Amino acid sequence: MEAEAQVSELARVVVLLAAGVVAVPLFKRLGLGSVLGYLTAGLIIGPFGLGVFDHPETILHVAELGVVMFLFVIGLEMEPSRLWALRRQIFGLGALQVGFCGALLTGVGILAGFPPAAAFVGAMGFTMTSTAVVIQILNERGDTSTPFGQRAISVVLFEDIAIVPLLAIVALLAPVTSVVTTGERWEQVAIAIGALALLIAAGRYLLNPLFRLLARAEAREVMTAAALLVVLGSALLMEAGGLSMAMGAFLAGVLLSESTFRHQLEADIEPFRGILLGLFFLAVGMSLDLMLVVREWMLISIGTLVYMATKAVGIYLVARALRTPQRDAIYRTALFAQSGEFAFVLFADALSAGVLDAGINATFTAMVILSMALTPLLIFALRWMPEKKEAESLDGIEIADGLEANALVIGFGRFGQVASQHLLLRGIDVSIIEKDTEMIRAAEGFGFKVYYGDGTRLDVLRTSGAGRAEAILICVDAAETANRIVELANAEFPLAKLYVRAYDRTHTLQLLKVGVEYQIRETLESAMALGEQALIGLGVPPDEAREVTEDARRRDAERLELQIAGGTYAGRELLRGNISVPTPLAPPKQEGTVVDAETAKAIDKKALLAPRRDEPASNSHQTEPKR
Image (cartoon, helix red, strand yellow):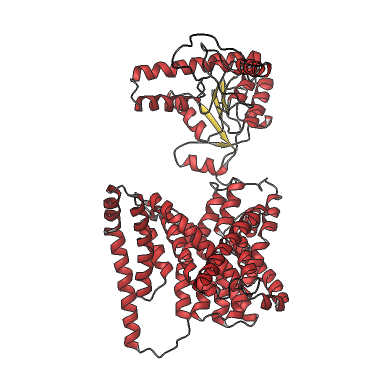
């Protein structure tokens, strides 16, 4: 009988793992995300689905450690210096958006008939956006490093931080089951403050020396065990002090965020965090009362749309109140309109604390799931938004007009800033134009006078003084943009010498064919210098390293000459590849003999493809590598 029970438990574990392994890749393939995959898998195998698990709360209790580890990893990413640098956006824009949307959604919840405490928890859960979704969309659209992207990341960072005090508020909202005297209340406060102080002191003065000591032992499993000890120990200390376990893990992460062991700790915790967090979402899916969802489908559907619309209005109003451009305001609204995985963390904690009952928890959970299911539609709508930005404010920026310098620099990014230094140090009269207003304002702070102008327009080139300039330095990023400026300059200003930044080797060949005065690949010299320093670091004498660099530069120039005449694949023999040709240990005493005609044909074919001994081996690629 005991053996059968063990087999049954093992079968449940297999089903649990199989559900996640099958559902998550499928949902990610459909663009719905891993969280919805876990939730759906849990719903299928839970008590309201196939009934493989009858008591999901037992799994949820263990899986909550995944949330604890999740917040520890978030804490590791919250470097105090980074938070300080973004403090105005995080605690200004982030706090305003979360607070305003939370207040609006709380009002909607109360009007819908939910108890005030439940309405507040539901509203704040819905206010939390999926960090993974926001970061993914920003990366896909290349907006992460833009001012808009930095503001969006600031809001996400504030939401990540806000989950910790929200969990503490849930504990305060929990119904009191026994009468607590004033003295007992102050005692609880003192214990909580003491636990918090002890954790901070341990984090500042004990953790780094501990990890340095363990690192000397060179035992990877001990470091992993220590990382788990830090996470679970800090969570236990906070729980003993009457505070949230998640708060303890988060604070431990923040205290270690600038430690030299930060990345090692994150790598050690990651597998446990991923598995336990996946179990948490599976357990949330199992706990969802499907019968209630079916009965209340109208309330859930309308509630989801109302909550999303209310949150969208709140985000848009905050954006416009802070003078965000119209297009950016709409973009941010679509980006943050859905709820995220932190809602499930907050709802699960509120359910266990008695702030939410099972019915309200199921309703809110279903609404969050539905909003996340609608996320791909919002992403699709974002992808169809036109990339063209509305007219930028030119307040305080001069437009290029009547410039008459000897040299004209077009584009003042990281390349143009360095290239212009030579001219300015020599005292050459230089005019600089750039079409990125943020860059122009930033350059002014460093003592540069940069004019606004689009170098691809002939009228702008004329007013920028291209007709009088002896040299035009084209330092823009995109190859297509550079080619357009070269075309205009060659046709309209033939006396000006063109010095052009090339994107890659293919772009270099295009520039050589149209006869520019000078071109250089943007990464050529830096790559040459890096390779030379790597040789010196590996023990090659500096003189020999310089000779190798000159040889590489000579081969590159010869190959370019051959490519101009013979096309992309000409001069491949000048490349030194890393595919070695095996040679025998001793010379053969006699020539080999071919066994049959088929073998002879294969040997002949291989001999034709192999490089000669006196030539360097080369890599065969179907496309030209970008250099």
